[in-house]
Image (cartoon, rainbow, N blue to C red; front, top):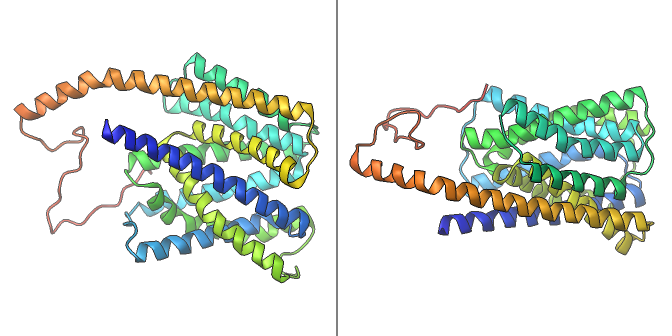
Length: 348
């Protein structure tokens, strides 16, 4: 029970950190891009990831966490895929209307559910599906306005949905299959994510804004907001991997829509953005859907724990009466001999 309560506290802490840091960075970036005229979102994201890696490297040097070797092919492909998904999301926003971009983000949840059902054989109850449907309807009412379609924008949105879903499912799968923490995975993959965006970011931004990040005149206040944005991004990136690892890709997307509702609310209260009855109704419906999702997930987890408890007790009794044998299905890592080098884990 003590381990379970500490795990639940860890999940709550991860969710709170993710919401607080994400809302903060949205407000910071909105001021940077809308008020100060710095439109280079993809390049800024590459700086975020570079600062995140440098911060984690310092933390590693100070022994705040241990680095676990992961197969280079796995971490390289994973990092590049994450970077590409961010680029496609930014391109989708650039080539589509705001309304269609919001629909793209909404489509990530059902597509993630579909992929996990087909390839990971994960089962979602009707209650969970209903709560997700209410959530998506609410966010759609609150945030989706115009739906202007174009061929290039639609293709980019589809690519953004596919790459984002796959990268988030891999974030969860790698942490659990290879038994690595969110910090270890982020530390290993951040350089590759930063590299792909550092190379392609200026090109993507120039395509979208018709401006060059290299010819932009950086004032002291713009530099200050860029530094602040990068510092907040360390928390955003860390909490993203933490939440997906402790919960699931679908839960992370649900949390993302909570952030959307909070951003709309903060935009109205702090920045005096337009706010209508439609926004209020949509936010209330979305929050109701989130509440149902949280309640149903909690109830299903309790049932699962009660179902697993007798099995765990039987396994424990068997462990007392039989010697511990080395094997793939023991669920524990065997101690290695001193002269045996640790192997790098791989999913590829």
